[in-house]
Image 1 (cartoon, helix red, strand yellow):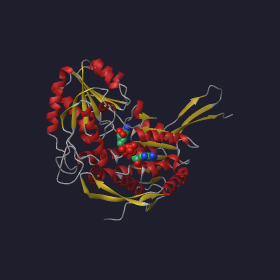
Image 2 (tube, rainbow, N blue to C red):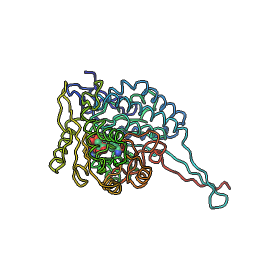
Image 3 (cartoon, protein in one colour):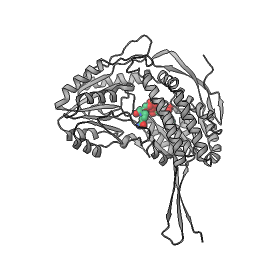
Image 4 (cartoon, rainbow, N blue to C red):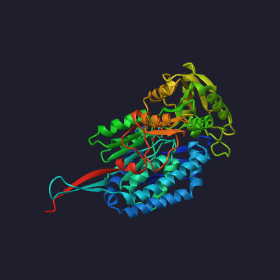
Length: 482
Ligand code: NAD
């Protein structure tokens, strides 16, 4: 085994307090690498380094920032196959999905390289004679980032890239389960020429390293992606200290996909199976509630089951695998628990839900599709975060829309229909941050805003030019030239 991968603090790679083996969920005998875990004191040192680096970085030129981000983008894209393989090996999504996510990370860095040069302000006439008003955007300061395991390269990238582009310094704590991709991104940015302390990596546990970032007075902003229960703790800590922090939370979903009688059946089945089960259903935007009109219901269920029977669930790195393993034993236990709950609630298992044995020991679970469910069952209301979805039969579009909105969450929602009238009405009236028509609820572009409403999200949007709302603070300056 090679020496453990270290944390980056103040521009130096440093040993941690302990070591964490990164296990391949397709083969638990395969250790992807050993990654150090930071101590509380090291997290504090990282915050101090970011604070010290901030004044100079905030005044760096857009050209300097552009060049570093562009260089990082070029390297990520040039190494997409190797990094995609690392991602699939540590997280378990298929190689095609891993490479796709890596390409997306490269594109995000290229987009925000351009954004460095596009940041603008406004100049307005004052209501008072002879006075000028300038509105400018400045970086927020030290940004603490806490990320989940399910998009190990894309989510750290869509937080780091805008933070750096707009002149902030960063302390990143990636998910303990998947430190490898974050380590690789930080290494690339470090070698691309970032000044010491601008970007710090502190791998480790949420309860220790994450909590230290949340509680520290010198962290100006927190961007968090993860589950609702952790999000609540993050929010409470972020506003609970002596100084309240700017806050952005992206959390769970129970995303509805409505299928109307007039939908193209082939399109609807593809959209549903992709949205619900690809990436092992481990997407915050997964279509876990399939709300299907009575006239198409039976044909839709039958065609979904046929499609599911044809999917290969196997080692993420194997050619031909459609769905990789669940990420770890804890998540697998949660998936099985909800499969049990759905059965107890009276749902009918139309397909799947069995544990699978493959050549290597891994967390292989057949996608599970439930029918005869209602929207008040726990399987319809709570996020499972695995390859588990349920079909709810409805009589009309109006019933479908009301049911789609009857949830605590509001991240993504979709409709399959050939009717412009229903598509337009759904786009206007669906209570979610992202609406998909004849497209899976998961799968978004990198240059437009991403995020939800209701219980799924808090604060301003991520990605695209909208990211500047979080990573900059507005200053209004008045001048009387005399
Ligand atoms: P999680 O909430 O368990 O962990 C997220 C991060 O928080 C991890 O880095 C973890 O170490 C850290 N953490 C845990 N306790 C902490 C504490 N007390 N203080 C500070 N940090 C702490 O989530 P997960 O299991 O890694 O990810 C799955 C969840 O993420 C799902 O709910 C999914 O819907 C959500 N998610 C949301 C989006 C989105 O954009 N809305 C995207 C991806 C994933």
